[in-house]
Length: 68
Image (cartoon, rainbow, N blue to C red; front, side, top):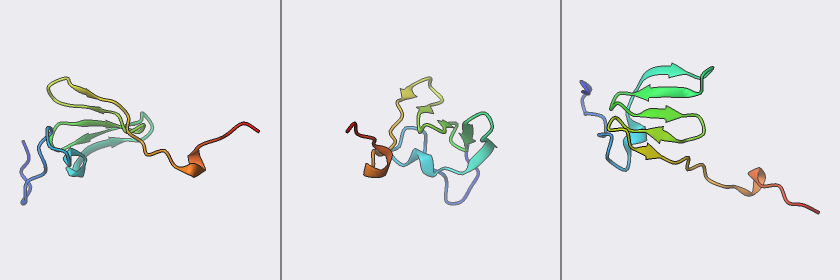
């Protein structure tokens, strides 16, 4: 699928998100990567074989709200 040199990581590799963007639609919240992965703004992913990767945003102290 990828014509780049060096080739983009395949969809099943751990570094699949490093593939180049083919289409980017921030208004809809998704991007298509060269390896066929749909990457969603919440960091969830849909692989070409239909496998779903749950969102995996890092939790930081700045993003966590605690009750008083």
